[in-house]
Structures are given as structure tokens and as C-alpha cells.
Length: 369
Image (cartoon, rainbow, N blue to C red; front, top):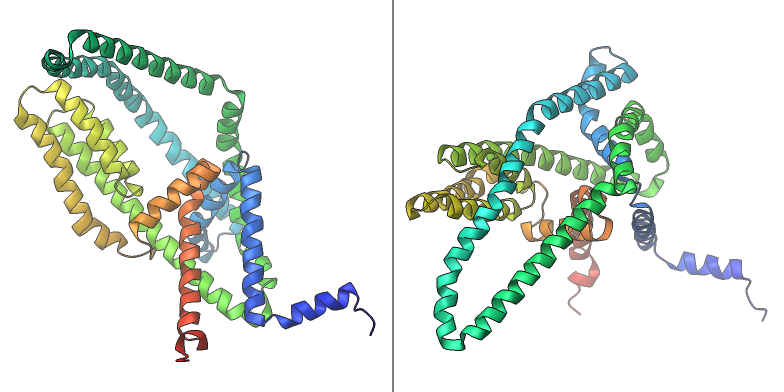
């Protein structure tokens, strides 16, 4: 019997795979190639990813302008121009103030270190009676040397970042290229969607469209709700810390609210910085306790009112998995990975739920034998 040719062998292998399995094999292959692409070119993708996200966000306003008989190109240009003007105004108003607050915060660090050393010295003196003054002196010397090494390393890193031509080029490309890329993507968004839709497999086109709609609705609702929560938290933290007289309270409140899109991280960062400054600024425990109480109360408001009201379970993922997605994206692909972490996590969440529904209705699960 003659040996089959390679083409025949491939045909037999492909035909032996059920259609549903072939569909998921193609999905897995596409995801693998996409991850390889992101890993290889992550250094230059930031303007394109930012432009794509911007076009996705502005697509709905662009459609509203189209309903007003404004052409897609003109609507896209008007929206991009409005975004640029808003960001420029925010930068002109907020950046000088934030720069001043950051400078004052940097000035307070030596006082904080001095007060911490004053607090620790009695403990070290008492400890020296048990383990010996010579050992304490050696411990102080080693600690001083290590602090010096850390400070020198931090300064070197900052100098390298500021003097790195590639970092400067990435910032310039983000500022210059992102609006251009966003404009072209937004202007041609309906054509791009129709073009991608034309390549969908006919046997699964309805399923893919349905699940893509679910993903789109999930991401839009989550992003909208998270933005509202972050803005409210910025106001709550800033006003509360400022009213209690904490130095740089407005800056810390804005930073805490902004970082709150990462569950628990924003609150922990703000709490740590605020408590450090309060220990260096206040001498009475009531003022220090008031600062800590602010974070406890606002965290309870966020968990019991803001998050259920504006976010709920929009993305369908546990906060632990959201943190894992953000950290994994940042580790693998840098800032590009952070931008893509939640969309990819939401997409995978929908796909996993589809697979689970298929499994729970399959003979593999229902069979009693």
C-alpha cells in the first residue's frame, strides 16, 4: 500500500479534528502570535496602543456627531482637537501646582527621616544595653552605608532616565504620534470593524459577534464606572486631607484617587505617604489618628457605596485577578502591558465563561458513566 503524501496526511489530520475544536485552536494560535508580537515590539507600541484606546473611547461620541449630519472625518478632527485642548488646559493649570507640591514633599523627606531616627534612637539605646554598644554602633554604620547606597542608586536611575535618549524619544512619540494615530483610527473605525467582520468564519460569525458585543459592553461600563469612582475619590481624599492640615494633602489625595483604579494599591500608597508625613508634622496622636481615620472611612465608602453603585461586577473578575492582570501585564510588557491588562483580562473572562457554559452542557460533564 503506497505511503500517503504529506498533503493528504495534513488533510486527514485536519478533518479528524471537530469543527468546534478547530475554532478554538485557531483562537489559541492567534492569541499566541499576538503575545509574541507584543513581547517583541512592546518598546514602540505605546503610541499605537494609546491611539487605539483613544479611538475606541471616542467612537461613541463620533457616532453621535454623525447623527448630527457631521462627516466622520470632521467629527474625528473635532474630538481629537477637543481632547488636546482639555489636556493642555489641565496641564497648564495642574502641573505647576503638582510640581510645587512634589517639591515640598521632597523637602519634607529629610525631616521625616530625622524624626524617625529620633523615634528609633531610644529603642536602639535600650537594645544596646542587652546586645552591646559595639554591635549597635556597627549596626548604625551598616545602616548608614546601605541608605547611602540606596540614595546613590536612586539618583543614578533618575539621571539615566532623564538622560536616556530612548525614553525621551518615547515621550515625544507619545505626545506627537498618538493624536495622529488616534485620528486615523477614529476616522476609519467603521471601515476597520467591517473589514475585520468580513474575515470571521461563517459558521461562527453570530457567536463571535455576540461575544464581542458582551466584551465591548463590559469594558465600556467598567471604564466609565472606574473613571467616576477615581474622580470622586480624588475629591474626597484631597478635601479631607487638606481640611485636616496635612502638608501636600491635595497632592496626596489626587495621587491616591488616581491610583485607585488598581484595587487597594491606591489606598495603601496614600495611607503610607500620609502617615509618614503626619508623623513628621504632628506631635499629638489625635491629629495622626485623624489622618488614618480618613483612609478608613473613605475606604468603607468606596467599598460599600461607590464601587457597588458605579462599577458593581461590570468586568466579571475578582479584584485579586485584576491585580494579577495589571502586575503581569506590567512585568511582561511594561506600561503597554498595564494599558492592555484589563481589556485582555475581560476578554479572557468572557472566553472562559463561554468554555465553562460549553463544558457544563457537554456530554463530558453530563454523562454519569
